[in-house]
Every structure is written in C-alpha cells, then in structure tokens.
Amino acid sequence: MIRRDFFKRILLIQRNVSARYSSSDLNQINIQKLEAEQSTEVVDEALQQREAELEQKRNKSRLKDNHRRILNDEDPFPEPELWYQGTLKYVRRSYGRYGASSGIDPAYCWPIKQELMDAIEYEQIKYPYTIGEMAEKAKLKRAEKEQSIMNRQRDISKKLEKLEQWKLELQQKIIKKETEANEAKARRERLIEEVRRHFGYAVDPKDEKFKELLEKREKEQRKEMKEARKKAKEERATKKLLQSTKTNVKQEEPDDTKQEKLE
View (tube, rainbow, N blue to C red):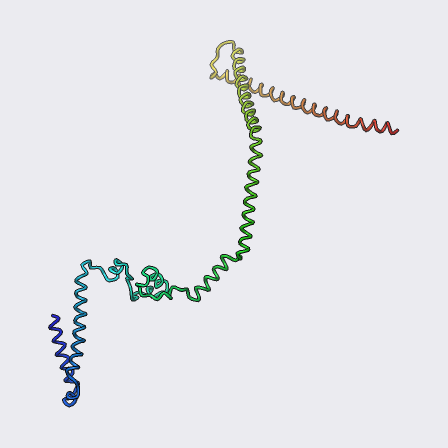
C-alpha cells in the first residue's frame, strides 16, 4: 500500500513538472535534481506515516496520548488544548509537577508585578505592626499570662489553707442535718404513739380517723415549735441588747470620773 502511494506521487510530480515548464525551459532545469528532491520529500512523509502507524500498533493499552503521558510521568498536554491550560496558574503548576521535562520556561514561576503588589498589601493589612512592636506586644502578653498564673496559684494556696476548716464545717452541717432528721423522726414516732394511746387500742395507721388526729397533733406541734423558736429569738435579742447597754455604760464611766477630777 505504501509502495503504491509512493509511485503514484512520483508520477504526479512528473506530470506537474512537465505541465509547468515548456520544452525550452526543460532543457535549462536539472530535472534529475528536482525529481530527487521531490522523491525525498515523499519518502520522508511516507516514513513518518509508517512510523505513526507502527506507534499506534505498539500502543496495546489503547490509551490516549495524554493518558499515556500521565502514566509515564510526563506533561499530558505539551501544547495547550483548552483555555485554562494556557493560564499562568496552570503553567506554574505543570512546571512544579514535571520540572524541566515539561519544556516550560522557569521564569513564568516568578511573581508578576501585580502579584507582588497584592502580596505587599496583604502583608501590610495582616501584619500592620513592625517586628519591634510585635515583640513588645508578645512580651506584655507573656507577662500578663504569667501574672494570671501567679494569681491563680495564690488563690489555690489560700483555698487549700481553708480546706480543713471547710471540711470541718461540712461535717458539722452533715451532723446537724442528720440530728434534725433523727429528731423529726423521733417526734413523729412520739406523735403516733400519743395518738394510739388516745384511742386506747391498736389502730391501723392507714385509718382515716388516725390520719386526721395525727395531722391535727402535727399542726399543734409545729405551732409549739414556732412559738419556741420565736421566744428563743426574743431572748437572744434581749440578751444582746443588755450586753450592748452594759458596754456603753462602762465606756461612759471613765469620762464621768475625769470630769469630776477636773472639777
């Protein structure tokens, strides 16, 4: 097939040459040289076509060219095929991925003037302070943190000193609540016993009459306890008032004696 195409192209070239030049001109042109040049071009094209066919047959994977380049760790698109493949970002990324084998000029990786201006503006906005100012701020922040830690440790030490006292107070509160609960339980038991004695025989605590009488006795008892607390409070207030009166009298006596001496 290739040989047939080759001879067809030779005949075509000869016809073109004979038609282009007249009989007088053919004597002045080196026909052999022209035919040799044309035949060389045809042979080169035929060889290139043959190589392309062989290369296609060798590709048993049936991969596309760009996929095969990716498999071989090569740039899949040496020549841009889509719009974004010609952008500066894509070119830089390709050079960073495939290096010098990509055929990209490394100068493209250097930032352009606008990018440098944007970077400078970004730095000025994000870091508005100088290195000295930043160091001073960091120093103050570290000092504040250390002072906060010291204050917290001091507070913890003070609380640890009071820990035993708090434990004792908590224990006293627990004992007090337990005592009050036991006293309340004992009072209720006494009331129940009183109610049973009132009836003179064993009564079921779930009986309505028993419940009514028990509730009545509980109200009376609460009233008595309230009056007792009120009386105790009045006694404490009276005692406190008497003590304050005695203290005032003792403070006034030296002043009176001094006045008598002066007279």
